[in-house]
Image (tube, rainbow, N blue to C red):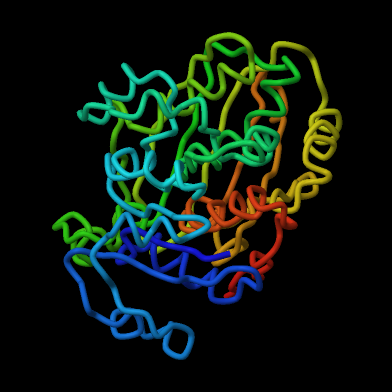
Length: 344
């Protein structure tokens, strides 16, 4: 497969390059950046020396149309402006931003403060969470790659939602993410002296990933879902942990809930339901496309607690995008994605 990457200078772009460097069925033919035109990829990212001799180029739709698949690792609004011309030429589009995540475009425009010009493209779109939208992904031309928080939280929550075992009106997701989730752009808040040895909540009044999660959870549940989501910034580079709290609607034991999750994910290559009593850590998934989960039914409590960890740049972004590419082209989903997590 001939691959194009639009917007390759950010963290998700370089993560795509790292993963695709060892993908046996993919060749990155072009990578674009208006600001870095002519700069060698290996000069900007020395970890890729010896793997790529490409230089960044200005996005050119005609050249991108010669690719089999184009990834957009760009700000919101870019993919929707170019997707139609690519799809007309038979090119598959995978957007790592939010242009095609939400189907309710009035909600999208409220949260992203941008006019959505791609409404007519949605019959060709699938939401790119493979574990729950695999059939739609196989038939799609455009993939809206999920956000990192929605990936981790929905994988942790959906078995209970689909089983009807929890109260859907009062779910709480307590999220923690490393600073790479904020992107590569310069920001005072992301300086080492500002975020090191500190821990804070953000987006408490509302976060862009909240409507994405509520829409997809409602699709899977068949009814509206009440979700409170509070993200936090932690002083590490990559990694994400989400602790999810829900009230049981039926009486089920720890063993029964554990069995529900093991059954739900037994054939999923990138979801690991850990043994009862486990405590997943972000370092268990660093650099890998794996989501690791553990489920708890605290004693003398009506609550169930699910803890979910992913690498926000891999399963939360670029790795999942490659997983979706594999599905689109009929390859085993694990192709190019069997990296073992880095530890320590």
